[in-house]
Image (cartoon, rainbow, N blue to C red; front, top):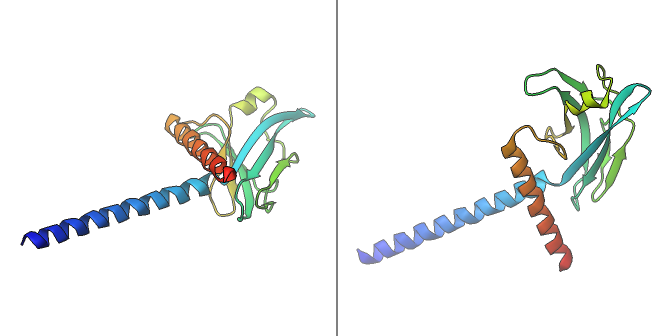
Length: 162
């Protein structure tokens, strides 16, 4: 009887350790996928109309991403505008960094102050949204984003030192 208890305790311990390794692997895959593409933007005013300028960087060594659309919203339940033409179909090759200057102006905005009130989202054709370098509306999401990007920088610096 004592032998069976030891065997079952060892089996449960190995199963628990296996699940921990699987969870670490899944977290690592999520981290690298969510931080593969980073996006920063700034606002510019030309001819009385405002539009963003995007700098989008693909940090992946092997994946190519295709951009889909930009969405603008005034807040959690504000008006949403979509720009499906400016970035649709643009490809980001592995290790590339691209600046997108020719983005369509946003209607109903006349000043940079109006633009700073908007929440901007860039989507990939896979349906996922990029984490932008802006003020995230929820504090928890912003902390998660900073943690993920810091971990990615740590992983990348460790890989480059080898």
